[in-house]
Image (cartoon, rainbow, N blue to C red):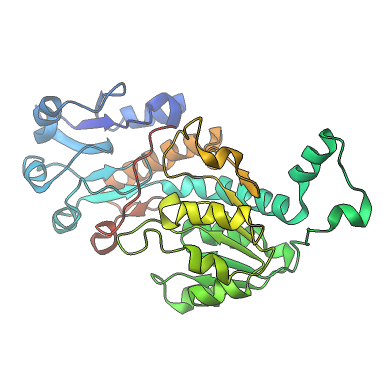
Length: 341
């Protein structure tokens, strides 16, 4: 009798992390679930089940040779949230295999944290707290010597995907002028969100607060460096919320320590950050341990979105919640796989 095998190979995620019991029950109703959570599923196990596999949840390597041995495969659902260079995306398109990810589950919590960190940089909230605890606090106007109001401040967004667009909706009450640099989008999409398409230079020069929401690609690694930081206004804020590799990290630290700009970052070139890493003692930087997206509800959303789309796919319908991998862009992505959930 034919079997519908569902391979679950979600490392560094686990089913317990991303699925409530009711969602896992929905997954198990779709077929026979084979799970490997403590390690990446061994090659021999993948090969054994490929002929009967209909769905893959996880980051399993799927080159063309494996796709050839998986005639029933309908979808590969990446629950790590980054499209990795371990799948033949073009072959999947040609065979009608969906390759999708519920990465947008993290957009809302990251946007919320980005706003909180921006308000902190603008108003000096945690800096004032540290001063108070050291007995060197300043009151009233004197205590606001290096602050500015976020409301009405010109904002620049570098990258305007799920996260950038979620953030734009979140800050509407603040009535900011919002400039967007995203070479992967037509200006019509930017303008539809009441934003101004702009060059990178315009975003950096004209904005009081700059947010980086861009993915890392083969074309933009380290593209924001010393020259770009020098373009920014004195005292402006720069928030790195997506991937560390898009900036020259030492140049960013230098720009902050010089007092030219204020910086906040939720991501780092190597994570976990070493105990002796100089960023820990750098002045002018608000630090966050890659935690802005990792809320309990966001991880459960990963699972529920993935299963909901799997249910649609098994009915012969297209997915509606997850983002589909496009071969033209997926092969350019260079995000490092996450190692900590």
